[in-house]
Length: 638
Image (cartoon, rainbow, N blue to C red):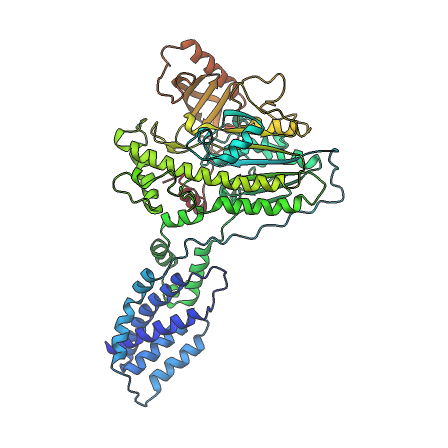
């Protein structure tokens, strides 16, 4: 056993020394804890393997065990020759070398080194290496000239922002308050879906939600050919580019940017943007595992999954990983947008800048400046401590307990209120970051149109829905709507617009042809409230004035169709709830059985809109393991 303990000591010390030299690393994130942990764990593995070889080869002395441990640690570091030479020395060097008696004891203690490093060093969870921003694309000599005096345009979309969050006096949003006071605004606008991908696709193409066919982040995805060639789409960014604008986008939600290769034929979000910067985090863990597999005997001999899965969950737990990628995102988004602005504003040509923020999407990780300002410790439910992991677990547990119940039990009200307070702290942080961006826009004094909205809202269990993607209640589809433009008289709209109306109104304000765009120009003299339809998978809602109908929607499928397309026009539409939002804004009193005429009218609206439904033309969609992992990390699947 002494020879084995010596081998463990030799392998551990050698591995730690090589790691300290940074051999084989080559990425900017140091990850010292993770690398030293792998080296120490490899030392135990390589030491026992070397000791076993020594035992069966008859080389049982402590000196030979130590040398063999060093040899086994060196071998994978592209130093196989050196390791082999040391192994030969261990076997054939006949001179007896006495080692201190403490050496085997140190080798025994080296078995604890992985544990000491695991608990004694700080993890690399809080550092976010981001891929470098692409340079602004240069304009060609044939770029169209803009109209004289054309204003700049800033379009800000905040992911997961409820309309009521910025109207709540208890939530500090001074920047949005000032923006609203300067422009035309609505108490809320209706989003076309409760999830990111279809909402943004509808907004940037200018098509009503049924015309793109997409129902949610997990639903079928329309092809570029269908949207652009068959339907004749000319996207929002394309129209600004054709009008002589420089177009650029900063997007923090990776779902909009990291479209897998298998999805590339499908409609993407960057069409028309000359520059698209998706603030993509470097996959530090994948690079770390490549380093382990290339430089550790443990990594070479163990199957990939057998090593990466347990190490991933041990060193980089999913809850911590999710929190890590979300912390401080608003600041990174603003920094990236301001960097582009600094260059765009040097050009006399107007710009169209699209800034998509991910705050306050889950996990709720407010910045230190706002943490505890609303989600105070005394509001914590029993059994939780207020740490990021505890809050993560609170949210997951609340979702599991209320899903499908249609209500929020009394004993979980405190959990809901605490999570809502955390969410509002993130809203306050976003407001601060938006202030930085608006200050950069205003610094030059250039005339600028500013539009502000969100893609969907967020639920906290009132109807059994936690986060979003669960229902079409107002908490998930009522979003902010603010427009500011030179010469535009501040006022509140007398009706609730659709989120899609942002795009058409922006084009009209900039003097650009909006032909082919759905929605309406909310500033036009003839603007009037329009029925608004919202979709999710197998559900639809229709709002007309204060009336809002919820219904289930199930298509029929041709089972002989290998592509599994729904049959056009064949679906079951079953009304389930009818609410009067004027007297019942929380959607608690179901009037379905007492308002037959209203139900019939709203159902007729849905049938009319469904004639343009593109879902039957899309077909089914498959998901790669990487897609499923991303959707799971963002909370869209379990």
